Image 1: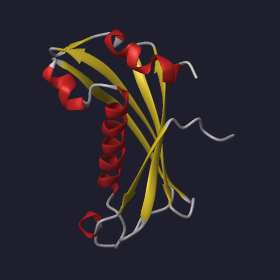
Image 2 (image 1 turned 90 degrees about the horizontal axis):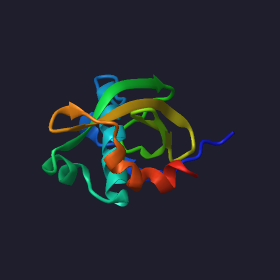
Image 3 (image 1 turned 60 degrees about the vertical axis):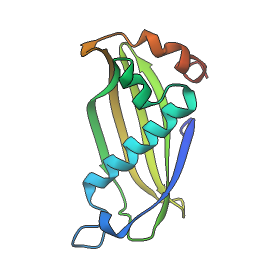
Image 4 (image 1 turned 45 degrees about the vertical axis):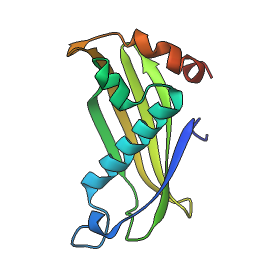
Length: 135
């Protein structure tokens, strides 16, 4: 069954993201995933920076990454995501694929919202996500 992706972002591997083996360093995959989530937020309304200015922050509470196939210098790839709300958590399911279609990464990222540093139920952003979550 194909995942119900709701957003995707194309990118390209830059040389400085490689380790000594000539493959993308594992930490850079988190940068790709985070950049995709930030760009996704901009499509819904307030972006990450605007939310922080309002005292509201989506905070990552758990990251689970399964590495499948490495990316190398110059590889073009796409990071896709879909989102589920599970209680107070917004769970991002993200996959990275080479332009050839080969899966590189499967990731699950749990986030919660805080307002002025205190956890919330995330209800203030439910209207932005409602259309997506009810698909």
